[in-house]
Each structure stands twice: as structure tokens, then as C-alpha cells.
Amino acid sequence: MIKYILNRIIVSVPVILGSLTLVFIIIHWLPGDPAQMIAGDDAAPERVDFLREQFGLNEPLWKQYLDYLWNSLRGDFGHSFANSQPVLERLVAQLPATLSLAVVSTIFAIVVGVALGVLSAVYRNKALDYVVRVISLLGVSMPKFWLGILLILVFSVHLRLLPAIGNGSFKQLILPSFALGLTGAGMLTRMVRNSVLEVIQEPFVVTLRSKGLTERAVLYRHVLRNALMPAITVLGVLVGEMLAGAVVTETVFSRQGLGKLVVDAINQKDIPVIQAAILITGIFTIIVNLLVDISYSYVDPRVRKAR
Image (cartoon, rainbow, N blue to C red; front, side):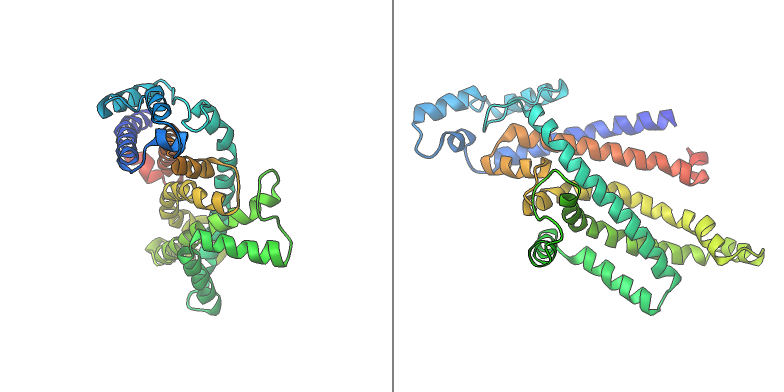
């Protein structure tokens, strides 16, 4: 297992470098001069030239890229173009809010998705199955920004049950977590339903029933454990989806966090902040996928034996 983890870490290094390179190319390819945007449209050319030299924007692109890679490896992400604050301090200050939103949304997606998926499979082709399938389809199809606005109108404006914007309390986390986690819940519902229906038809299930085990024991002790393997695979993708969706969700609900920080940095073309945020998000996603792979060994002994 240790050898497998080391191999995965080694393989992840080119992925991180590729992500950094792609982000660097895209950001510098976009139109607009960061120095001009910081100084303002009415700024004197001398002021713009001073800012360009101060932030190293007058250097050749290849040198900026090498400096960026070297500084990133040392954990030095530079200073923000917008307010000259250390980028790492800004990220550390905003990261807990985004992580709390992603964690609560993921838990909501797992609990709701697995429960609805099992119910839909147990009551196949019945009324409850059709209702669950419609709900899962809506969850996958609805855009997060539209769902967020709809939740604000219903629960904040009309019913006045939950706050619409801001950070600080668990109530302010409910609506954005629901808006962000509904897509994952719909995805997991469909996958768990299909997996349970497939495992139920396996010969070992017939054998267990013939031995006198109850349907509840067969379902929860044997079928569900085998059916959750594809769902565990989706968890790595789901976490990445939550982190990416936080950009839209935090903007709609006016929450402070990494997503809103990235949106503001893109509007200001604050290159160091954008690059550092994407790097941290990529590393976090790789770690989650590694943990998902390791969990295979504990859920399915066949995977542990093969490794």
C-alpha cells in the first residue's frame, strides 16, 4: 500500500505541473494589462510602467514562467496585484469558508444521494421510483446560480426562514450547501440506483436469499456494500465539482470564500491570486482522489489483494 501511495504521488506531480502551465498560459493569453487595470484608465504612463516593473510584468514570458514555478515550489506565491498583500495570507483567510461549504455540501449529497438511490432501486418501477428519478434529473439539470436565486426568493424573501447572504452561522450555510450539493445528490442517486439493481441480479444474492437471510440483511449487509464501489469512484469527481461550484455559489449568496476571491481576482486580473488558488484547489482534489483510491482497499478486499 505504501508503494502504491508513493506511485500515485509521483504520478500527481506532472498533473500539478501541467495544471500550473495551462493556467499560466491562459491567464497571460487573455486580453488586458494588469498594470493598467490596477493603475486605472486615467493613470499616467509612468505610473503604469512603474507597476509593470514592480510586479515583473516587463520580463520575458519564459522568465516569468520559470520564476513562477520556482516560487510556487518554495511556497512563495508573491503579493496580490490589487492590494499588495501576501497571496498566501489571503488564501488562508478565505479557505476555511470554502472548505466548510464544500464539506457540508458533500455530506448532504452523499446522504441524500445514497438514501434516494436505494429507495429508488427497492421500489423499482413504482410511484416512489418515478418521483426519485424526476428529482435526481432536476438536481443534475438545474444550474447552480438559478437554483440559488430560487432558494433565496422562496426561503429568504417570501418565507423569511433562512438568511440569504453572508457568513458566520450555520443557518447562512444551509441554502448555499443545498444549492451546491443538489447536483451531486442527483448524480449519486442515479448511480446508486443502477448499481443496486445490477448487484441484486448477481448469483450470490440468490444464494443468500436461499439460505434464509431477510431482504433487509441481504440489501444492507451485502448488496449495498458492493453497489457503493461506483459511488465511491464518483466522490473524487464530486469534491472537484463542489470546489468548482463554490465559485458560482459564493457569488450568488455573497459569501466570503475562495470562490469569490477567485472571481474578484479574475475581474482585476490579479494573476498571483488566480494561480495560487487554482494550485491549492488542484492539490486538494488530488489528495481527495488519492484517499478515494485508498478506501477501495477497505471496501472491497479484492482490490486490496490485487494491490
